Length: 139
Ligand SMILES: Cc1cc2nc3c(=O)[nH]c(=O)nc-3n(C[C@H](O)[C@H](O)[C@H](O)COP(=O)(O)O)c2cc1C
Image 1 (cartoon, rainbow, N blue to C red):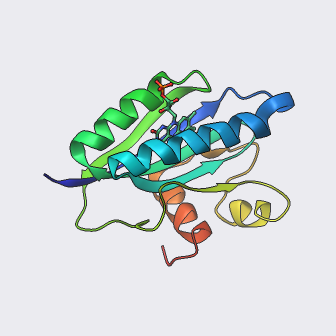
Image 2: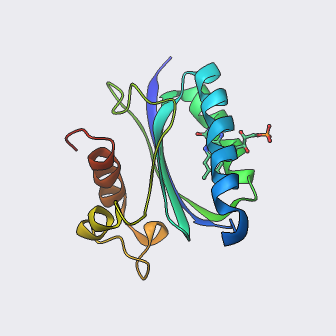
């Protein structure tokens, strides 16, 4: 069994009126599934886009990603990398999250992630570095 990391970015289909509640519901079910499947990682979210790092055993990550891709709460899911890793980068997170808001917007901006150039338009390195920064660990 081998440990892998998968990173994707997507366009959000959550609408403003119930974005908060939908995101909370998504995260709660993600953490429940991830706990059962030994998946850890980090989710970046803005009003318009998502990017997510998934880590775990290959079969579990592949199965989880298969479900995520089908989820109508986002679209245009773009797989950025799926690669073997020696160790997890987010071992303590059944799924961490950082949303762009008044507090974090500055940090997103430092990495070049703006409403005009949102998560789904960013390269892998930017997303991984930003997730590491927002998870409070050196990237
Ligand atoms: C942005 C986003 C991130 C998600 N992250 C995860 C995740 O980390 N793990 C997971 O099991 N499901 C995740 N989901 C939810 C799955 O896509 C799916 O809805 C959930 O696993 C329930 O599947 P089911 O309705 O087929 O039972 C995510 C969904 C979205 C939209």
